[in-house]
Length: 176
Image (cartoon, rainbow, N blue to C red):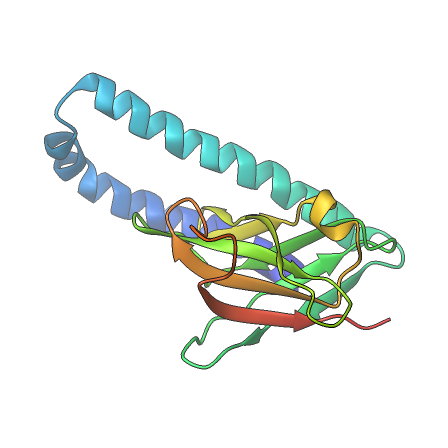
């Protein structure tokens, strides 16, 4: 399943390139200066660099013997899907989705739900996106105590302002 998500990237990239060519004049008019253009370009290149490396890591993780793929269940009011690729030792988890694309005013945040009654969700990073694919690398420190479930929340830009999930959109229950 993860391979299918990654395989569709090149076709989407060609479509996005065509669309971007049409929007170049508008972007340049809004940018105001070459410094603004350089900052915007650097931010986009950094996002692409992060996700392409993370995509390679997700494929390598998927190919490890004993790794598994767990689907996330959408919560009421959200229709997107995602998958988690989980390492055999459960110390590495990478999220893959085409539905969790951050926007100018919002981010999607990763959470680990530790075992134990009343255990509070632990923030585990933000979703990054490029080329139409969103990836999330759950922080090893958040996974260290174990995980009963994984979750994704929709948050203001930069993540939860309170340290707790604002609007949970996806949950994946883990077993074993």
